[in-house]
Length: 250
Image 1 (cartoon, rainbow, N blue to C red):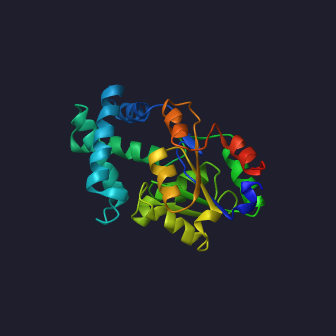
Image 2 (cartoon, rainbow, N blue to C red):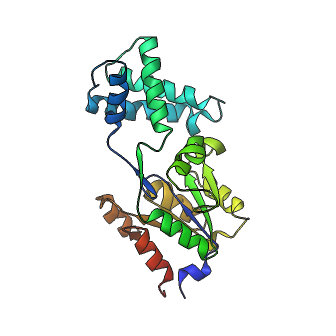
């Protein structure tokens, strides 16, 4: 019997699964600096600075400041300022404000993202098969309200409901985010749901822990995928392969 016939819901991760970043973080920080007449910051230093700053903010104010009731723009402003400082760029207040506004606007638009060509067809196919399609993402409200619609990945045509960490106050790999998804799908049983993602720790393990089916995409042929397979995970190259897997007799 094909797995598809046993499912009522499919949930999907966003970044790395449905869409990817275009270019490098430094590209957008560089454009923002140039817009106020400053030279490009060093890409490597900015990237390292951002990784450390983001990790610190996520630890101190998880889910984009949800529990602290921190406005989204304040969370990102603190993170971006710290990224620059760690990279060795301490701009004055007025200059930083202009640079930050440019960066914040860029990442709140479709500009830095590209949708994988199999994403929309797969989501529409799943809905046509009568499945409820949900999105589970460690992301803030702009993914739901601005970014996904701007990329043509719309609620109502590609997906039915979303569970975004910045709106829920729970983030992957906390299994509760998967339980919220099951509730939102109509309190369906976990064995009637499949989660698709690209992280063993954040997608596969917690989804399986609540009783859901799970599989991973390895779109970029990363070395970790070998370990995922050894751990028993189903790992497929793209959503076309997922469609084939779901409709094949097991």
